[in-house]
Image (cartoon, rainbow, N blue to C red; front, side, top):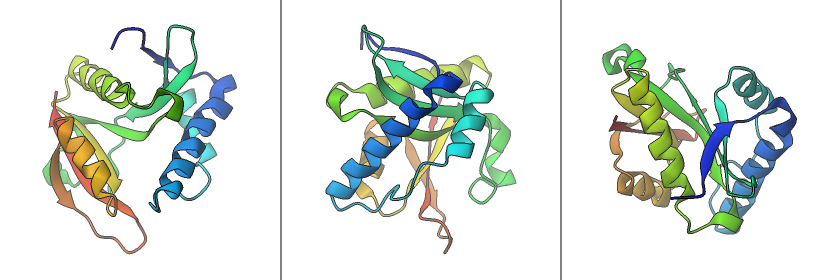
Length: 166
């Protein structure tokens, strides 16, 4: 989609990233979905910003319309040695502003992340999704992701593991 670019988030934009995640949480709750019904993990976001792993999707007027974190941190509770964790980049905390709904901003961010993974010599872009959100699973499948497996850990709501080749 033209008019959208993705750039690293700055430390001063922590409230913007948090705002996008809170907005997504509220939208999910309004639809009866229990995903992300807790405050954003500020410490994780700050660390991702410091390491250049948290990004903002911005429009032509430099308005933030999405956020995505992309890194090489495979969650060891989900991705095993048999998965070759180093062969992928991982998506975390992806959200799109409701004001930009219907503009395929999520697809733009995922395509950007896939290219980033390929440029780093990774064969996969991976993510874990909320186990109880089948609509989100269908979304990722429409974006070319394949369900690898469900990991059911009592202390984790996430655990639907998806990947797509770079």
